[in-house]
Image 1: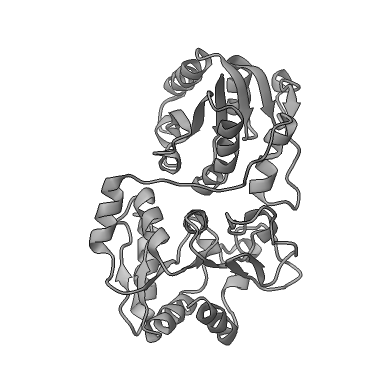
Image 2: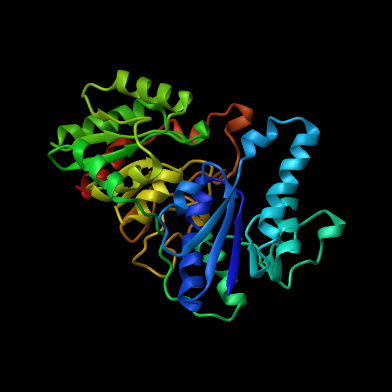
Length: 353
């Protein structure tokens, strides 16, 4: 059996499809599972033993091309997938590209019934319902339910190779450490720099080392530098120095993780490291860190401090949360992430020590 899964979204979105991949493989042990995804998210599936092949869509490169070259690249990308003729295509992305690939590639097609293109309406044999107030992990597994298959577990996974492991081991501190990833590619999801600096200093005062990670993005590294300038202590700064797979191994060795609503938060949870996460405008019931040891989400409330197993989410209980907006009043700054009761924050962190 040949299966294609499509997810043209961000790093965290792809990571949260791994329980689906895992359950597809458990139900169809002999299946070859391929995956179509955006460039930059493919590291999430690197070394995944259930994936046969990835089709990487070079979004940034294709967008830079002239109109006719862009069309040619789009056609070539779709053609390279369509010739495989899959027994089952699962499109987890709303949008025409995934729908066209599904139409041309699959015998049985599963996807969201949301295309505004009249030519692509009603192309799916089975339609995935919306996720509503459910966690994305559980909602994605609707595919397994639609196929009348068994859900064996709901584990989110990421892997690394021996080089990643040995490299990170060579730079790990010789004492217990807390992994902090204080940034997101969406800066409106970040807490105030002064708050993060206070958290770093508090952890260091408790005789733990702090290891900071961030991507190689200029804005992320600049934000980390600002946080470090506000610190009274000196944490280990590995910003821009690790691949995603190496960050995953680093997170697996941490005593616990502190961060914001971002892909690395989900990575830390995926490697079973306890997470303390700050959420602002996002819906925790959809995107909270998933505990692999549990079968049902623990995020039942609209907002406020919530737990799922070993993980804790810190969020205000304001009526406007979650607003799902990129900052307040178009400012790109979320006021709900600018102030917290630090005594409560320190108490939650101390409980993890």
